[in-house]
Length: 463
Ligand code: ARG
Image (tube, rainbow, N blue to C red):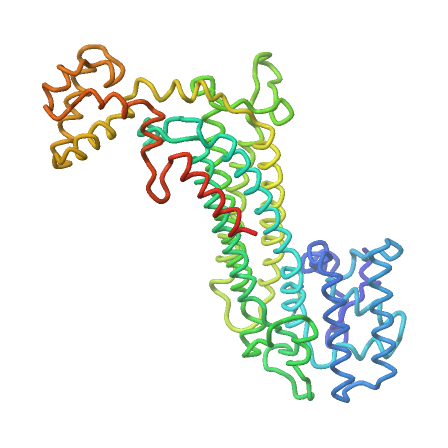
């Protein structure tokens, strides 16, 4: 970039040309160029409002609208390229208008500042892209729930402390994942609802002495209402923090699902067989098939958490109102949103193509006394106080371990009766992994019928 050709919106006050590197340092066009269409939309509505309020003449407004539309189209069809040596997207579009229209182009900025302009552009961008991200979440949930329905009866160990705890079904485990994503989507929609206020017309920080109609601007840009206070409008980045937080939580979920997948794909577990298309090999170990995609999604959760911390840190010490520090907001949030969209797509592809080793999972339910709670519950049904039932079942487990037995069902009825006379022959019916699972019919439990009900409810409420 030649410093003598730099076009800025603030040239009048400063006699010296900006130093090349310093100018590049403070420029943001490399990041905010994706706001081009939003910036144009904002300018069109602003110009129309200025005309309606008698601030600019009708022919100027018409020329501005026509040219803004033309610029939008040219950018869209590739005949106009964004000049990356401009300071930011606002300067580029206004510069383009002025190049084409002369003084008419110089009229569009009346009553606004780049402070409210960038705030409105950013919100418009989020209003059109967050629903797309929510769609990605829905698609990921759909893939999870498909698998969950398919594996609604496939028993596997459920874990606490990564120790085998009680039998569950794979379908049940997968529904647990989907619940997290459902809440994530709700968080995005909630943030979207709160950011649905229009800051345009707030000016630099104090509103405008020109007769702007901010209600009309807000309405024509599709916002619910104008923001209440001009100073808050240009200083506030809560919507950025909320969305970065919603991304960080979504990514934390994906990271945990992927951690499950990494563990399940190990030779020790072997619960999941990732498709070869969604695995990688090793450059040295010929036998390897690595779950790199799951690991990378897990890793990228670190990056999105980092973005949230960046944003909170950028905002925390800022005096009211606008400060240039706020320019850092877009790079961090764009990166978070892009990362989440990508991770959701990769996750859904990887899971969709994976096969589960149901035999291995069922086998893993044997040998760890996962049926112990059910033995205790059996006694509770016979009116033994739970604490006593728990103790009797625990003693039975100890007896098994001492005798080298791998499950309670290996004890004879006589041996069981030594620990509680309430044990009868029908106890063996409740001790198989599938019986344990089938018994858990409580709302939210792991019985196949209940899992199917959960799937149906989730699919309905996420549409
Ligand atoms: N590029 C700037 C940003 O993203 C636009 C606002 C500039 N405002 C200013 N007073 N320098 O925040």
